[in-house]
Structures are given as structure tokens and as C-alpha cells.
Amino acid sequence: MLHRKRVATALYYALRRRIRLALGVAPRRSEPPVLAQSVDYVLTWHSFLLDQIKKHLPQGFDFLGKHVCEIGAGDCLATSAFFLARGARHIDIIEIQPPTVSDKQVQVLKSLRSRGYPIDLTIIQAQSGNAELALDPRRITYHRCYVENLQNEARYDFIFSSFVLEHVEDLSGFYSKCWKATNAGGQMLHLIDLGGHGLWEDPLPPLDFQTYPDWLFEAMSPKYNRATRRFLDEHVDAVKSAGFTIEQVIPIRTADDTYLDQLWPKLRRAARQRPRNELRMIEFALLAKKA
Image (tube, rainbow, N blue to C red; front, side):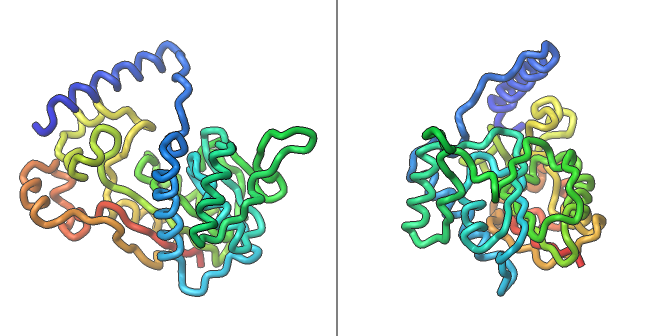
């Protein structure tokens, strides 16, 4: 078995989480996962996201007047500020956690703009009568819910998510909700990471977590708190079943052949049943359109 100490650690924390949920104990408040890091780190990460959007948008795509939905924005406002600067009319942000609006957030957005990215700084404004910062309510609607609970239908021209879908348990339900919420001719772009997360991410090789049998992975990784170990074909099939036409699937990060050769005998059966050229795709951009 690979990484025995990490397996033991994962089992311990999974048990703690199950006990906390059973007792109804609220989790401790945590720092914003990205913005709590150094400014240089935040700028590097947000620059990467903006570069991926620009790279994978359809040629000639125009945000002017578009209604955009960003799913699972986390503590990042750079992408929404980018969409607004490109002419988007309104942004709906779907995120369970409250918005992170702070002086550091403003500093990051200003730094991104100084690097040449189109960024609308007016996404953050001082509330009237005091100095407290808030999102511009005229152009930003913030929904603290899951996509599955969203009631909007045929509303969005463009849906975007960055490294969210690897955590979604019900892919069919997710993409079906996106279909209902998208206008005819609308598009969606998802950046997806099929590698390990938490204890199983960098610097560990990306597919080591695919070696554990399902019963052990379930014990280590409770639902709604994990990367789901879904595969590329499962995303593609769910997107098509929802009614979308896939425009492109472009690799962002792949596993090398030497690593796959060494790992292949240890992989769980479901992984070994996948075509090798699909399994090696760790991160990818999926662009789809509603006819």
C-alpha cells in the first residue's frame, strides 16, 4: 500500500469529521484558502486562472452585455472582475462560503490590473455612510448555496468554474442544472483537476490516490469533503447527457508515461479500465455549448 502514514492520518481526520457532524458541532472558522497566502502566491494563482480563461474561450467570444455565472469562486474575485472589465452585464457568484471582501483583495485586483489584465476595480465599493467594503450589488448577485439548489432557469450566457467539479458528487445533476440555467447559445467553461487533493496532492504524484480500493477511499474521504475520483469520460458523458455539445477538451496538466508505467499495476480496477491517454489527463479545460 502506498503512503501508509498518510492513509492513517486520513482515516483519523475522517473519523473526527464524522463524529463532529454526528454531534452537530460546527467546524472552526478557517482562513480564506488563497488570500491567506502571500500576495505573490495569490497573484500567481489568479494570473494562472485568468490566463486559462483567455486561452480556452472560443475565438472571438464577446462578454459585452452577457450574464455570467461563476460557480465555486472561493475567495477569488479576480475572475468576476475580469468578466466585468470585458463587458459582462451582471455576474452571479455561486459559493457556499461568504464573500471575501478586504483591503488585501483590493490590493490583489490592483496588482493584476497593473500586470495588464483587464480588471474592473469597481466590483468592490465602500458602502454608503461608512468605510466598510462590499461587492457592487447592482452588478453582482451572491448566492450562498450549491448549484443543485439554484432556481434560475435560462438565465446565463456563460458559466465558469475553476477546479470545482472534481468535488461534485452528482455530475449528472450538476450539469443538468447548468443546462436549465443556460440560455440557448450559451456556453460553459470548466477547469477540472482529476488529481489527488488534500493529503494526496503535490508534491505527491497525481494519481497515487487512485490505487486505493473503494472501501478504503470511502473511509478516508467522506462525501462532500473530497476529490471524487471521477474520470474524464464520466464528465464528458454527463455533459452530453445534459444536452450540451462539447466544443473542446484541452489538457492543462498530464501524467508522464514513466510514472504511469510504474503505477499501472497498483491502480484500482476502474482506473485500469480507462484508456491510457484519458487517464494521463490530470487537469483539463472543458468547453461546451447549449444549442
